[in-house]
Length: 95
Image (cartoon, rainbow, N blue to C red):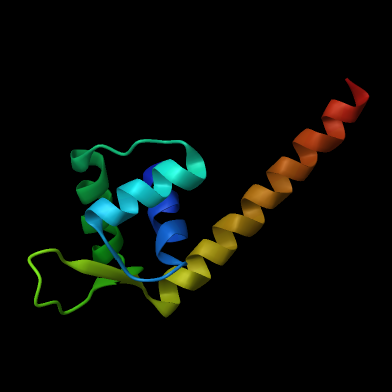
């Protein structure tokens, strides 16, 4: 999975958000600025994979939500990252 996709899933794990709100959230928790092209390209791929879904809105901004499949995928990716980080930390103690 690409980094932008993982960041978007992590953002939506906190609740529904539209594109700009996702950008602001990711900037806040990860210090990474997602450009509009990167953001909406990743959103399209995440929707196609069934990991996020658009939510009905009367506003012109379209919110997205994490699906159950997206939550499972995020949990799997987080567990894999946790394993890598633990290995890094263990190795750094010996460096």
